[in-house]
Image 1 (cartoon, rainbow, N blue to C red):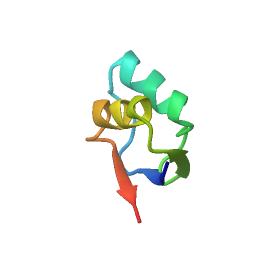
Image 2: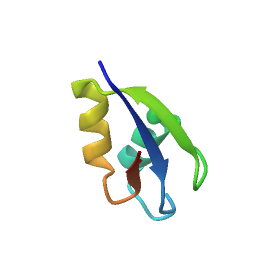
Image 3: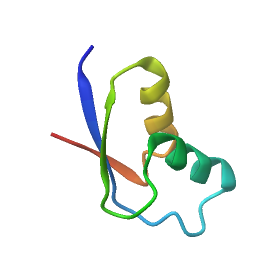
Length: 58
């Protein structure tokens, strides 16, 4: 599997609780943090859920 880097680009303030928990599960707890995960369907689904708060970094 390939890996993807995910960066939080917008604040979690005002986001629903389920989206905040999704960011926590991805390991994104602060703005502009970058984490690296395997590109599994579950991770891609979590990224899709919070796509307005994160960006995929090359």
